[in-house]
Image (cartoon, rainbow, N blue to C red; front, side, top):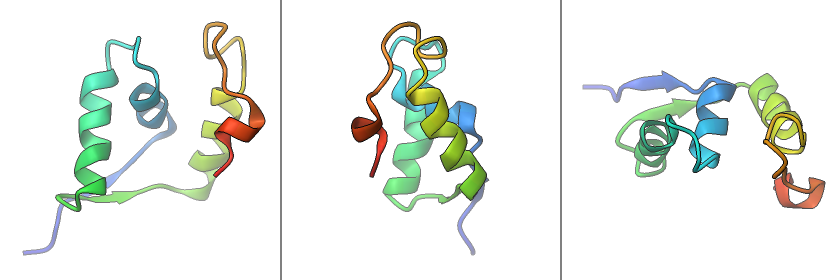
Length: 73
């Protein structure tokens, strides 16, 4: 049986990072399942670009954005 494949939208990645989000727990659990290889997580290049833009934007991150160096791999 092949593993379940889940496409991670940018919102799920942001919620997994943002511990104040009501969606944090569910999103972080899905991401952790992908890290543990319980599911196969798929992230498009466009979602990585969007994630960087959101995480470094003070308006989007309610005044607590990451610096560009913190958001870079």
